[in-house]
Amino acid sequence: MKMSKLFVKTKREFPSDAEAISHKLLVRAGYIKKLSSGIYSYLPLAWRVIQKVEQIVREEMNKAGAQELLMPFVQPAEIWQKSGRWAKYGKELMRTKDRSGNEMCLAPTHEEVITSIADGLLDSYKQLPINLYQIQTKFRDEIRPRFGLLRGREFVMKDAYSFHTSQESLEEEYENMARAYTAIFNRCGLETKAVQSDSGAIGGAVSHEFMVLTDTEVGENDVFYCTKCDYSANSNHATSNLNIEETDSGFTEEKIVDTPNTKTIEEVAKFFNVETNCILKSVLYIVDSKPVMAMIRGDKEVEETKLLNICEGIEIRPATSAEAAEITGSEAGYLSFVGLEDKIKVVFDKSANKMKNFIIGANEPEKHIAGYNFKEMPEFVDISLVKKGEKCPICGEPLDVTRGIEVGNIFQLGTKYSAAMNAQYTNENGELKPYIMGCYGIGVTRVVSAAIEKFHDDFGIIWPEAIAPYKVIIVPVNTQDELQMQTATEIYNKLLEAGVEVVLDDRDERAGVKFKDADLIGFPYKVVVGKSITEGKVEFKTRTSKDAELLTPEEAIKKFI
RNA sequence: CGGGAUGUAGCGCAGCUUGGUAGCGCACCUCGCUUGGGACGAGGGGGUCGCACGUUCAAAUCGUGUCAUCCCGACCA
Picture 1 (tube, helix red, strand yellow):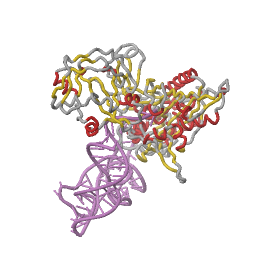
Picture 2 (picture 1 turned 90 degrees about the horizontal axis):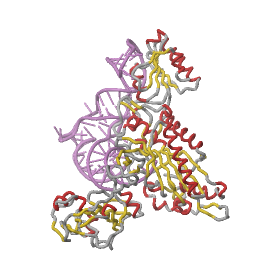
Picture 3 (picture 1 turned 30 degrees about the horizontal axis):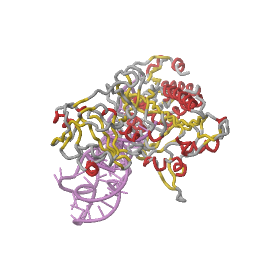
Picture 4 (picture 1 turned 120 degrees about the vertical axis):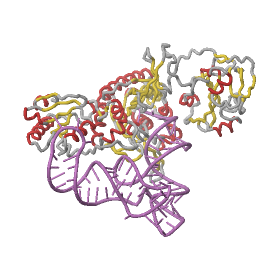
């Protein structure tokens, strides 16, 4: 490709509406153009990168025994109603109507379609197990799209679905996919960590997320990992061995105390002169428009996803102070489950199970109860957010935390969809059985962004070679110089003939412009044809090398063939 | 959805306080000159000032509403 013809427009400045470095660079280097919030055109350079990633995904998935197909992007409400997700998926599912008034949606994922395909076409145990995948655009009407391709509303995803006759078979495929994923990401130049996670809207029992670890804020997940063993988990799923010690406030007699202006746990602790772990904190949530009170030790925080799962709910949010007042008759800061046990759902975190004589809100403004003890031990469950330094649930060593970008995940779905949609096969004994299913996703466009987040410098993108849009750019320093231009063109033609992905920067621009663009776009290699051509030499550089290697044109060509 | 901000040429921004012919840089077109890290000179094209209503002789500027975009929280590939 000649640079003068390549459809790319680099910019002098970063876009003003971008935050993440990958987003800034993709726009500035001319890879993408925004159409609407979270919706982007992939310009030729980006499309080449995406296709590179797709090809790697395809090769590894095929190698792992999966078969590619392609399912519809626009889907009828019917199948979603059958699975129960038409009601459950929420606003993220983009709904619309066709001309006949039938309710339709844009596909955020394809469990419903694949399950209905299986129901019609996978009739016998003899056809199982099988793994089917596609690479396709998805649409999720995200609450808050951001960071360019990292969290778009429209994005490219590889999604695979496997069907089995047994849990063992599913687990085998789950491991098979985990291996394939590691291979895929490695080939893309990305190191990933498979961490335990919550299965969210997709559902199912066991799931892992593949995280690219990063210290920047664009890693939207907190990943807890053991400093010794290989335990690691998303914060929405991580647990710690609390080894809960008994806490005792020292107030042995239960009494209501006037506690003016003590709305926060810190203020209460200061007022009573106790540690925060002697206070039982009450946090009121609204889960699917019903109040739920979470009770947790004062030094711990509620992990909302865990609480949501315990409640088997769909949406969770903290109650507003007005709601808190209405529901409890008190005001925020002085809430408590006491007296409300029978009126609203109360969930007790495990951190509270060895508290003695603790302090708790009195459900009256400006009053707390000191020296409270459970009258009857409630059921304690895990709804707390792990904190750095807490002990690993496997080996007991301290946990550390880092940020991660989720580029893929794998789920053991079980019979969630097959049972709901009554999708069955016939087993050896002639009995109808629901498929045992797994599903496996990779965010292709997110992989592209994650690679940039990991590999860039002040000058631009540093592509891993395997996913770079082109491998090498040939830069004649002065296109008016006949020898330079002629040599550059010769190298270019030879590399083209050899099938190397090469760009010739034939633009009549000053050298500085061409170098800046080459670095910004991120070609892994650069061959500069300049003054030294009078001595028969050209310069060979990698994207990150400081100094050039002086080579004859033939030697330079051999670097790529 | 809650909290904060911004909408002026393809991009980045000024102008708005104090209403009166819409500006700058980059990019684009022409000519000249230049050619090793985003040169220079001369000339040129391009904007319903997000949209609607209102106030006024007069609105980018003031008021009301509305839409969009971005940032902080709940989602997820």
